[in-house]
Amino acid sequence: MKSFIVITLFVLLASIAMAQHQQNEHNIQNRTNMDSNTIKLTIEGGKTFTATLVDNSSTQALLKLLAQKDISVKMEDYANMEKVGSIGTHLPRNDKPTTTSPGDIILYQGHNLVIYYDRNSWNFTRLGKIDNASQADLKAALGTGDVTITISLK
Image 1: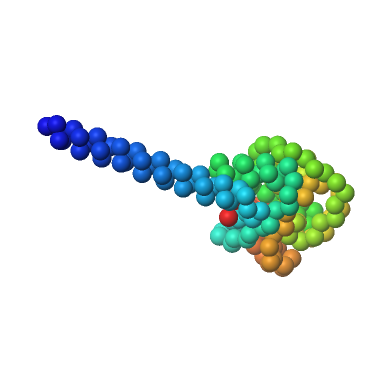
Image 2: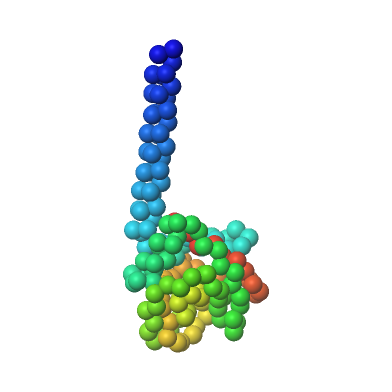
C-alpha cells in the first residue's frame, strides 16, 4: 500500500512538472512571437498573408493582445480603397500625416484596423505592411463586400 501511494505521488508530481514545462514552452513561444515584428492575417475563406509591423506603442499593444488570443475583425469596404473594421478595443495612437499604398495596415481613431488596397492620405497610425502582396492580390483576397480577417502571431 505504501509503495502504491509513493508511485501515485510520483506520477502526480511528474504530471504537474510536465504540464508546467508545456506551459513554459507555450509562454516562451508567445514571447518569441511578441518579440517578432511579423503577424499573420487570415482572410475569410483561407487566404493567408504575413505582415511586417513598424515599431511603435500601437504595435506593441497589438502584440500584447495577440499573445492572449487571435483577433477577428469584420471589415467593410470603404470608398473602394480599403477594408475597415473595429478591433474591439483601443490602442495607443501615433497619428501623423501618412500617404498609404496597397498593403498598408493602419490604425484609425485608435480602434479601427484598416487594410489599404489603394492610396489615401490622412493622419493615421501606421501599424505595418502586408508582405509580398500586390494590389491585385489584395483585391482578389479581400473581395468587394464585407470580409472577416483573423489576426494572429506568426
